[in-house]
Length: 302
Image (cartoon, rainbow, N blue to C red; front, side, top):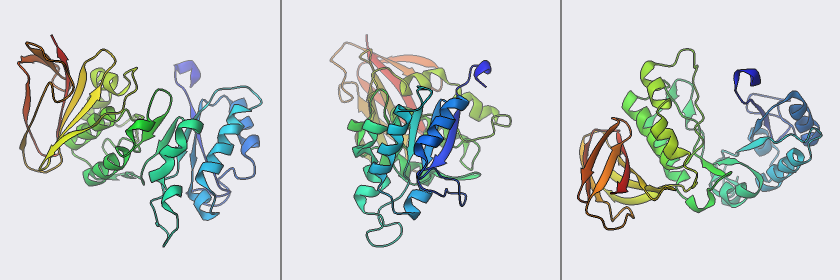
């Protein structure tokens, strides 16, 4: 895999068991397992929390210990750590888990021990990812934008091409994950991905917004009905602007260049990331957005 130009990740659990059954986790053997992963040449490890929840481990303590094991691995190999505490508050009953031990609070310790941390429950399952759940995970991820930055990211879960959403809905998910500066992890069989989905995940303009070196997570600028305006400052001074229609019927969404944080100018350049077209405006940013769709723009002053 390395010879093919790829990096490689592996999976374990913070507890002794995993989401698929007994004996799949690393609890009690963090250093031993990390040393083995490093010796095998892995570049990343995702640590789930099914077994961690079963054994009522404290997420911050468990992931801090796993981070320390990576730092001390016997091969001195750098590895990314993907924190996957997916639990919602009181998922197992009153106080189990408490808010501060749920996914909603991983941002409080994640930046110091991991490279990404899940911010909500699973976005779906193979063949069963809904746009409603994509919006739910997007909203949860948006709760703590200040914790994101170069090297450490809020993670709203995987991208779901060909997993139950329409082409427009998946394009919206990719657009909003780019606005959130989220890890772009694709959950699909890439030998059978549809041409439409392949075109989305290969859109270098959208990827550039997600991976902008400034590392700023986009935020909600305004809402009206089902229409929302999201803004992400980019390192070159321009703004990524997403006009998101959360509803199923077309809606007109509008904002302005100054409202999204650009300085006053005689005109502005609008680059549509999905149509790959460029236009100009005196300041108005407006579009008729179809249902479940997102217009993704890169806006700059002339």
